[in-house]
Length: 518
Image (cartoon, rainbow, N blue to C red; front, side, top):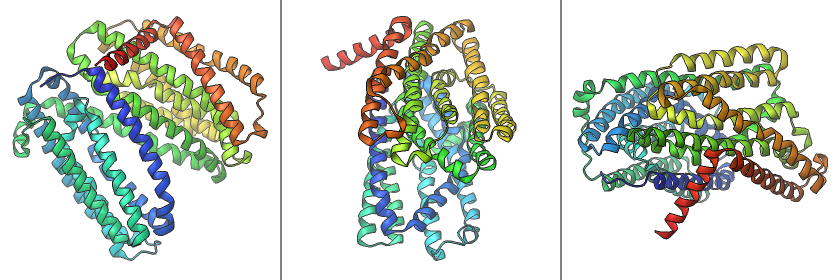
């Protein structure tokens, strides 16, 4: 296989992911009102609920795609085409089984659709056509598109993201136009199926174009499954990690609803909406390094591996620091201007929401390197994190309400994701003393709150900040000033005292200069 620049593909993945994220956000915002006006709120609610139900069925996949991606790293690096064909064939066989499980589960679930959607104004034919249209689109990934995992493992996820987003954007626009012209639910579902098929054809064409030597066979994959026992081992380990994360995600809203009133939940959801959008942008950019890290570890250069970890850790802490400080200072004024001052939460609750965002972004580098090393066997850790998160949320939520519930995942994350996981990586992967991580962590974390208070003081003096008298123009001016000042000062501090951040910046500008010359 022809080897390309690992960094070049990482940057391309980040660029495409970011562009596609904002494009999808704009199109969703633009088309949603059209769908609501012409198809109705009941139809949009039905479509969202049907897709959520299918999302639960897709739990059967947990861990398989991730495990296959890890197993592919070394053969891709070594250019072992025959082995790649075998692994993708095994993956195709496993995905075929999962596909049939989901199909069978979907058929059984469809028997209960009349009860699930008993209150909807639609006749049963529309409900069934819609459900099976979404089920068909979901099954294409298991029966037809399974080979695209090779693109992801080979740092070519930009191909999947780019063409998928282009196809889905055209689909939504066509559905919007036909909703205006025809206002026909069956046409909406027909377009859903049609573009699912079109997307599959495009992806498989690009896979064939990129890997003309790739030959897969499902029947052969079944016979080869016993030759790759590590796949089953990694799937079992990753399943525990994935299901624990999913459990936390599903239980947290239930606990919030239990310990608070509906008005408080509505206020909380406004802040979550803002933080999730920002996390989406960050994830689309930073998570694109995952396959590159796996490729780097396969290379075996321990010095380069460790320096890359420190550089990515520094960059993530910088981004997390800027995002966290800006969210804490600017989200409540934004809510006040957008919805009204009565929708603003207390500073303590906002701080807890921001800490959740901060810790999620911060853990990314460690998680990616654990994945690159294949260190999944600490299955007790995600289970402990889930139990600890729920236990703290139940106890603290009883006494403190929403704030207590939010403390659950934060405390659990601090113990498992930010103490145990780095220790696990340093001892079993990087083979470095853990105190080096502690020093690095403290050096990164201390400037963030100190600079926050300095920038708050300077920006308030400069613009005479007053939450109760904000307007859109004033909020934009203050936001630009605060964000710019904080980002610049944190950049200068990190550049001065953190060598890994300085190396990252130097490497980034060298790469940009090299690309311009080419």
